[in-house]
Length: 217
Image 1: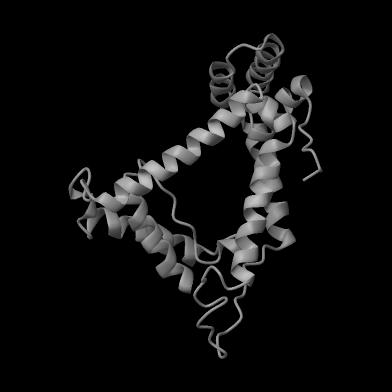
Image 2: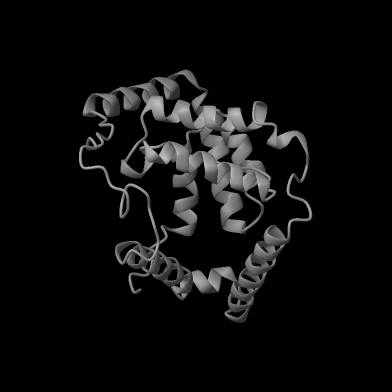
């Protein structure tokens, strides 16, 4: 439940910082598939900020704030340093293939967790101000029956479509992938032909293969 307040303030900070768009996590999203109630509450958080708080009534509510400008400069400098490192390796693709991006993310997560466990970074309700009587959260469980139901829905969807149109569209996806041309137009046509996401991804996988992340950290 602490996450409800936490996410609301995070969203507010993002708006005050000039974010163009944002996503509010559900309070139980870290535990698994969020519950419908939690998703609705996360949506209401955005709606309250947009339509009740008044924070969106001006383009830049904190314009001229020395602190915000200082944070902006700090983030810009750090981001520029990362971009320079990536460029020095030959671009993002080369950086991913070398495992650099994965290592940076893993090391950042490790440093964060160490700081939390050492008490250097406060997480209210987790490493400070814990409540002994707090109930253990119950993550949402999705039964196997729902999986079977979804499989049947996809099967029914495929039966209703024009199979030849879908097949032709998927062939176009493969051909475009092989030629290394822009895939967006052919993917859009595949969607219009009622090809499923799995089929479209599978068509590209036949050409590009499946990505295997480097295991070394």
